[in-house]
Amino acid sequence: MALLPRWFEALSFQAQIVVLALVFDPIGFGAGYLLGPEFGVEPILGGVYGLVAASVPTSLLVLRESMAG
Image (tube, rainbow, N blue to C red; front, side):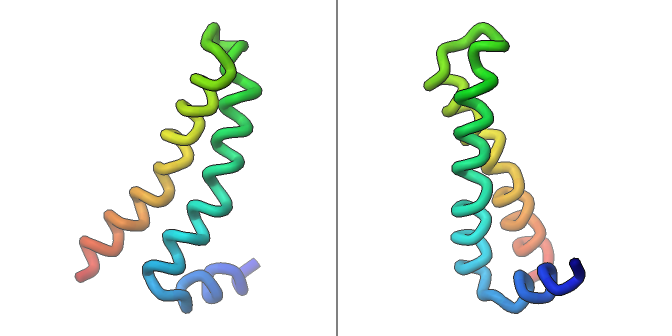
């Protein structure tokens, strides 16, 4: 399990953002699309909410990078 963080940290900042987007965006959209009706919204709107929630890890990475230097 410790291999993944080293591999991820070895990537350039731009590549890290792309990897996070490729991993979290489909998961966020799918989860939001499936869970949206449970919260009383249309599935497509739930997908949009899922995409917004999936952008949090990317935002935290950008925040960490801006604080580091």
